Image (tube, rainbow, N blue to C red):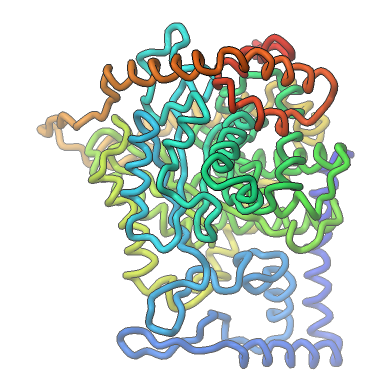
Amino acid sequence: MSTLGRVCESVEGHARFVADQVRRARQDAAFRAELLERWKAIRESIGTVRTPTGLELPALALPPIDEPGEIARILFGEGLPGEFPFTNGIYREMYRQDGGGSGHRAQEEPTRLFAGLGLAEDTNERFHYLTRHQRSIRLSTAFDGPTLYGLDSDADGVFGKIGEGGVAIDTVEDMERLFARFPLGGERLSASMTINGPAPIILAMYVAAARRRFGAKVVSKLRGTIQADILKEVQAQNEIIFPLEASLRFLGDMVEYTTAHLPRWYPISISGYHIAEAGATPVQQAAYTLSNGFTYVELFRQRGLDVDRFGPRLSFFLDCGLDLEYLALARVCRKIWAIALRDVFGAGERAQRFRLHMQTSGRSLIAQDFKNNLTRTAVELLLAYINATNSCHSNSADEPFTTPGEEYVRLAAHAQSILLEETGLFRHMTNLLGGSPGMQAVEQAVEHAILEEFRALDRLGGVLAAVDVRYQRAQIQAAAHRYEQQIADGTRPIIGLNRYTDPGEKMIEPKVIRTPRRQKQHQIDRLRAFKHRHAAKAGPALDALARTVESGGNVFAELIKTVEHCSLGQITGRLFEVVGRFRPSV
C-alpha cells in the first residue's frame, strides 16, 4: 500500500473515531458531562461584537445546541477555527477586525494581488500602486514566458515575448529593480513568485538582491513564497525545463537550504490552480494537489529532513471557480491534510496546518460581455473567503484579452475590500457560515470523491508512477473536454456566451497593454552589458555550479553565489549540459 492508501485509511479511521465520540457522548454519562462542561466554557469564552447598526453578536459563530452527540461531532469532526482538524480555518480570528475601532484585523490583510508586466521597473511601479492603501505589503509576481522557461531576453526567437504576460527577469540586477523601494526583510512585507522550472535560480537572485541592499543579516528575515511545484508542471502546465529527477533534486536542495537559513520563507506552493485551469474538475484539482503534497513530504523525508521543520513551510494554492464543490473544497483539503500529516507522517500541529492561497478562476473569465467577469469574480471571492483562505488574489475583468490595466486591477482589489471591510459577512464574526446543512452535504460528497481519486492513484503505485503513465494528464484532458462540450451544448450556462446573449451587441475594442519595442531592446542591451561586465567571472562561477551538481552538493547554496555573475539563461544553459533537458513522453 502506498502513502495514499494509508491516507485514505487515516481519514476513514478519523471518521470512525468521530462516530465513536458521538456515540460515547450519548451513552457515557461521565463523558457527556465533561463534554457539556467544555462546550459551556467555550461559549462563555466567546466575546461579543457590535455592528454599526447596533446589533450585538458573538465573535465566534457556534450553533445554539446542547445535544452532546452533535457537540462531539463539531469538536472532534470539524474542530473550532484554529483547532484540529482545522476544517473551519487554521486560525481562530481569521478576517475579524479588532474591536478598537481602527478597522484593522488581528491577522494581516488576506489580499495578495498578482502583477507582472514589461520590465522590472514597470512591475515595481505597479506593485507600489497596488500596495499604497495596504498596511501589509504582499507582493505577488508574474514572470514573462522567457523567464518561466529559463531563457534570457536575448535568446533566439523570444523578442516578441519579452515582458508580455509577466515581468522580464534576466539578472540579479533586474531583481533589485523589481523590488526597489520596498523594505525586503521587513516585518510586514512578503513576496510571492509564481515560477517553477527555474524557481531555485530566481529565488537565489532574490536572496542575492536582498543581501546587496540590506546585508547578509537580512536573509533570515526574508518572508514570502515561491511556487516551485514541479509535479503539477508534468501533470498540467508544462513549464518544466530539467528532467523530473533533477528538478526534484534541485527543489529538495532549495527546501533544505531555506528550512535552515530562511525560516520565514515558503519554498514551495503546492499548486492546484494550474491543474484546474488546465481543465480539471474541482475534485481532481484537490486530489492531485493533496497527493502531490504528500509525495513531496515523502521525498523530503527521504533526504533526512524533519517533517516538523519543513512541514510548516509548505503552502498550497487552489483555484476557486463557480461550481458548487467550491463551497467546501478548501475546508475538506484542510481536514484531509491535517489528519494525514498527524496520523501517516507523525507531524506536529504546525505542520498539520494547511496554509492556503486561493485565486479566482481565470478559466471562468469570458471575453464576450466581459464586464460580467466583475460579478463572476465577486462570487468566487465570496466562496474563497467562506473557505477561510489565508490569502487571496482576485482576477481582473479584462484578463481574457490583455495584461490587466490599472482600472480593472483597482476594481479587483476593491472587490476584496468591499467583501472584507464594507460588508459585515466576515469582519464581525468568525465561522459565520461553517457547518450549515448544505455545506456539510457538499463536504461529505467532496471528501468521498477525493478519497476515491486517491485510491485510483494508489492502484497505479502512487503519484510518481501515475505521472509515468500520464494518468493525471489524461484525466485532466478528459475533464476539460467535458467542460467545453457542456458549454457547447448549453448544459453549462455561461451568461453572455451561450445564454442571454445580445445579437446586436458589437464586440468592443479593448485597450490591450503591450511592452513597447524600445523597452524590449533596452532589456536586451542591459542584459548584454551585465554579461560583458561579468565575463571574466561568469565561466568560473558556472564551473563551480557544475561541480556542485556533479558532487551532490547543495545546488541552491551555490546558486546564490552564481547569480552574482551569471544570467538566468547562462545558468540554465550550463545545467542543461550537466543534467539534460526535460523530454515529455508522447
